[in-house]
Image 1 (cartoon, rainbow, N blue to C red):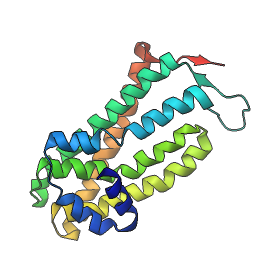
Image 2: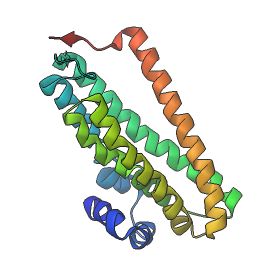
Image 3: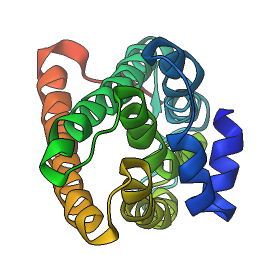
Length: 201
């Protein structure tokens, strides 16, 4: 079901959002079938890329590697952060919905939050080859399509007019940016408390 929706969001996004809205599943089932799977893509890709391929910065020829012992907790924590981020964004969608005269259930909010960011999670495959300029080049279209899915999908899932959906989407976009900054700050704090990466040649 997860990958069917991903395919549909690329080719028939409006129809697929309606299907996602009408998907019957409990919160536990939504997490097991959808939320726990997609964040594995960037986490596993980054682990493999940093330990096997090596990080390349600009025109520096030598690759920088992380030790497997250092990369594994970072991959697990990044996966947990993405799973928690989906839950938090779903909570914010549910909490803010009454302001915009919407009444979704929480599982609809979970699926909406997850599939909005699905282009970014799918672009996580690029971390198999962690080279800065390539990663930035691939991340920009994914970010653009993520924003498009937000503005298209939120009114459909919430079943509200497009004008109200535009305001709601803009508010959620701001929340998402705040969450991103908070996650970056948390990463810096964790590095300062002993979870900094260990490099090898």
